[in-house]
View 1 (cartoon, rainbow, N blue to C red):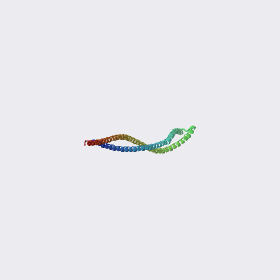
View 2: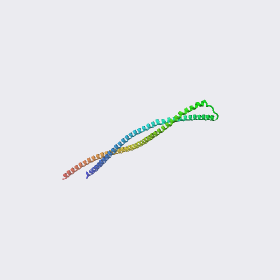
View 3: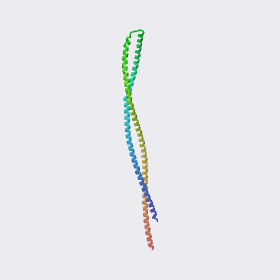
View 4: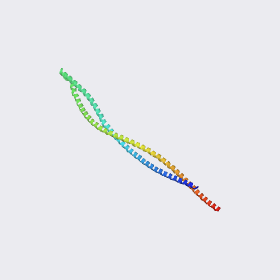
Length: 254
């Protein structure tokens, strides 16, 4: 009867040790799963960083193309526009001068007609010298106006080309905005992945702490089991000694 109690304690302790070992195996399996998830997440973060590098390279190339197109437009189109504007202003000044010269010639011709209708008079030498001079000034001006019309026509063609270049620039800018949006999404995904990685690390540390506690409990249970086994052996030895003593006492009584 006295030896049955330690045997029950030993069985209970054995069941507890088995339960602890089972729980530890479950925690080890969970730790392996967490480690696998962490490795997968690390691989995903690495791929995201690679995608960000590719995205940065694409953005740099798009910006380079936009800057090249912008410099080309500024270097060619706007320079032509400025030169044509200067030529147009010069032609306007020449036109004003020629208009005043034509008005002067018309006034002189009207005066001569009035003189011819009323009282004929000889032409002044100054007037006879100035009229061919005014006509000679008008001829190059008309040629310059014709050249200006031709250059304005070429300017319209260039403006059409620049319109196509503007559409190309708008397309490149739209692609650049789409790439920036994609880069922002990748940054958000990477931030979420980093948060998940931190959460997994916290859970991993908690599981490691729990596993260490289970190891300590298992060590304590092992020590307790060894103590109970020692007590059981001592009780069995004492029981054997008591049985021998009783046998010897019975023999002596007989």
